Image (cartoon, rainbow, N blue to C red):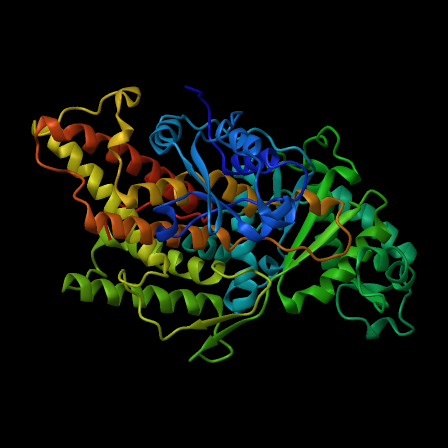
Amino acid sequence: MATGRLGLEETLGALNAALGPGGPVWFKETRARHLRVRDFLAPRRALQARFEDGQVPERVLRAVVDLQGPGVAPVLRCEPTPAGLALRLQRAAVFERVLGAVAAPAAPAAGPRVLLHCPALRAAPRALRLSQLRAVLVADHLARALRARGVRVRLVPAVRDPHWATFLQQLRVDWPAAPERAAASAEALRRRALAEVTPAGDPGALPAGALGSVSLKELAGGRGRAAGHDPHLDRCLVTEDLLSVLAELQAAAQLGPEDGSPGLAPAPGAGADSCLVVHVVSPEEESQQQKLDLLWWKLDEQAPLAQKHLVCGPVRAAGAPSTLSAPEYYELRLAQVRTASALKHSRDLAQDPAWTETFRVLAAATIKFEMLSKAPQSQLLLDLADSISTKGTKSGTFVMYNCARLATLFEGYQRGVEQGLYPTFPPVSSLDFSLLREEGEWLLLFNSVLPFPDLLSQTAALDGAHQAPGLHITARTEMVCKFLVQLSMDFSSYYNRVHILGEPRPHLFGQMFARLQLLRAVQEVLHTGLATLGLPPLSYI
């Protein structure tokens, strides 16, 4: 039997190629009622456009059934139906290939280094608006997803305020602490700025720390317009703080991956064309950031050519004052988590040290799933009156609850081994995956375990952004949260219906071990997905 990782993209690519020249036709089924009869479908209407009278030649059908190749799933049958060509995989073989494979570490992705810049982190944390918090969480999640693909990422700005460090730790956001100041870069930029600024007629009219203003009109109407910037941008007030921001960006763009420091030499190939700068901004910050882009180009000939804006949509909170800050939002969700736990366990656990960390993780999970479950560029409406519950199927708490259920399951198996009820886990190569016949088992593998690597790649798909026209880019940072919620729903349904740890009878062990191996893979996917959100798995809730 063929070995190696199976992939949905590889399988779909091979299926479409087998039909001959033309656009993609096949799609993967996801609904349970369709998966009872087929795994992929080539719709009849698409086949009618490809083949005369919609009749697929017999040689093409044979080519589809005989498909082979790296990453291509083995086909059981392919047959015409009223809906189109219906294809079913050799499911036992797919279970064996997927559950028996060892995931290889991510190879460094080709393409430019990525510098993620989040201006919101320069604000005072106590005054941080919800839209700015959303930008911070999007930037953190995007950085983790990129690194999971092997992309070299650097984060700016480094946080200097100790209050920021505490707040980011509460939210499980991984951001670098303050580096040494890039004094040489700042001084060089200052000299260039002084040569460019137009001093005020009355020096006393300038704000403290201001050097004067710089005209951006020529850049905005030329290079800026070509890059997608507002052509009507005119002047920018140059301040010492603004030059400090540019100096940090300049140093980060030259260093490359985050294991560098201001004292190191630039990374090989760390030129202007080798770094993609993505400014993750709230709507209120975008205009100022466009000015900063142009000013960077004006003062630094080595500034990266590719600067893109990921603008996160506005956030409104129903039932809360418009002045609600991000720390107040966190404290509100933390209090709701504690209340929900007291109701569930019929006692107040807020003073129990063993639960303190769990409550903080649940509060962070609640906030991240709220903030990241919609496309980042869309408007987000938060309902702060929503209660926190493990029963709701759309929340981060529900995902963490099912994470804890999986941990409890494996702890139960281990206790059974220690008590002599179950044998130790056999080699995976000896497992009989043909025993996995329950509908929910194929749903978990086909909709969750198998597509997960491709989903991570799509989440961090900035590959084309370096050469893409225009200033604004989008990112699909909502994909992981939506995926984990659906995975949790499928697992919960299966877990409630199927008794995994059965009676300790030898003739039942084969099916039990096959199911445990499947759920090990589900647990690994769940933990990896949570890691891209900065959330640790919980063993109880």
